[in-house]
Length: 555
Image (cartoon, rainbow, N blue to C red; front, side, top):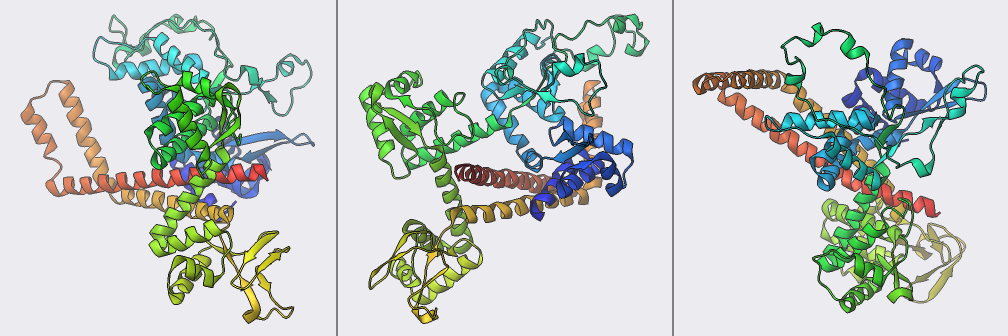
């Protein structure tokens, strides 16, 4: 765990949950598993506040607990899960794109609350949608339930683990902490509920039909509630499934940029066919026959089977090897090599950073070393057609920034101007003579993509932390003006609801002067720009994290 990651986790926890939760969360990230009394002692926080903070963190899947062999419960923070909070806007936008406003609000409520039952979620979303509708229109519970079922069928939401049934029936003393289990077959099984009703508006639900305030209603109206049909069955957003969707979109976009729209649509169809059957961490998709792909193409895509086979052959022969051929049955069996696709996307990100940071000539050298694997400085000068002094400076710049390195892999054949030499060791330098004299030693430049990706990922974490701090500073500096603007907007909204005249509204709007309006516009522009930068950096983080995770699983 690097300091940049800890700092970013601290900023995210404070922004979402406040100082106390941030204090407890960062302490667990720094120290690892801790029992509650140690947390209370080390953070000098009251036991009640620590318990509440841990409840919040467990509710949002940011902390897990386990029973120690001595019988005490230890709590451990999930740093990777904390960093996923950066991606919340992207999860919500994806749900809106795929399942309209209803899907957006379902995912938003799950992310805001951590875990919810389906019945409570459906009612909450229906109420929120009803408030945005015109007067007289309401959202039916059945329509929200239908969208929820579609999200579960495509694995974007999943069940939370439940307390084991034997623990509830055991007559002995309760365990220090409940054991949560989940059957994989039931993870996406939606309970059969008959939710009948429509969403309610706040202003109409506060008073009943007789105008009697809610606080004065008889108590018997709330005492005889029916039992919740899905009590104990909680749901949460399946972030791995969202990540799988982001990865697939990145692959489709890369194919479209490299070839054409038809090729990308074929790859999109292959990914869609295997999105539920292929685990998110798998290096390959399930093999698909050419006939299956042809039958699954979008309805409006009119290409013949012969043209499809030509496109599949073209994709399989491409040097990037996004698509591979695994057999000849069914007109040919094809897979998508997810690991190589992620490697190509991560490499493209590195090339882009080198281009922006050091210029086009350094990018040319970087791509050359990447292609040739190992090169001496003289070979770099000749192949890149760059003067010796400039090539030396550029190589040193990238070497000092850890984009390239001096390293040789096992059993690499090194080509120099005089002869072929086979190296069976892994030194940073290859001596021609036993005395290791610099003038008689080969120095080979290479690109370690995994090491460079980790370095760039660390810098991305620092960049996002700086962006968040800058956004918080901008907001704090203009706090008084923002509060004034919010008060004026609230007054105007209340006057519009009561039917105020245009002259009165104009008078209220003039409470904010022209310089203040200009300042507000500048603040809004800066904050929007910082938010967009956070999202863009997070896209790079996602590609690098996916590549590193895929590479580590293959080793």
